[in-house]
Length: 277
Image (tube, rainbow, N blue to C red):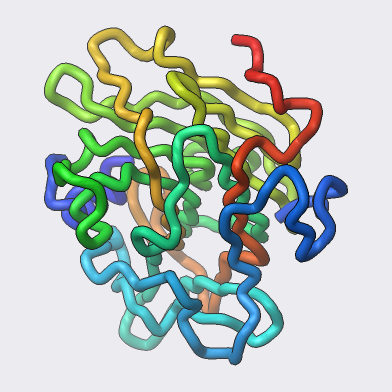
């Protein structure tokens, strides 16, 4: 992700939707225990509590602005890419520390409707809570890629119009590694995207189905495993970049988030035991 990653490196100061779960009904806090959740209820036009606009984010072919991220008044958090008379605008937000942290052993699930369009680059991801990007975080402060990054989803239109990519980023011989661990087919509409942080492994899910397991023992040669630490969530919809391609759209394209939950463990009964390699 050369162009978008450049923006992320800048913000970090370092180099460089779904079928509703049958397991838990809305508001049900029985096992698996919900550690925290955002259902994005509230008046339209507001930034939800525990979320902030990322003022250091950059886009390859547009301007990041807090005006493009807000509740819609119908229980959704909407992030928009817009074509304006003065160019393209987009946005990036993150969950604040310590209220929105995913600890080792816990499971993050995002229910969202993700757009696929030329030149538009939506993403759902996490970074280590020791990143100086998210306030005080967990000391000692560590820049990117040493803090680690897990991309649950990136839609790279120029790379594949029918698939999304999932990656890990960590230090590798002095450079950031780009470990693609899945590239599943996407379909329109609401889907869930999940990640289970276990000791020495990361499991990724799409609509409750296990799609990939990344293990410390199978990491790329020369790379460091930096994921045995708490993470915090980020959401963005960017414009342009080598993997998204040049933007040509008019009007507004939206990434709509219905719900985000952090569970104490995997909420899907078939996968509560550690997956096989």
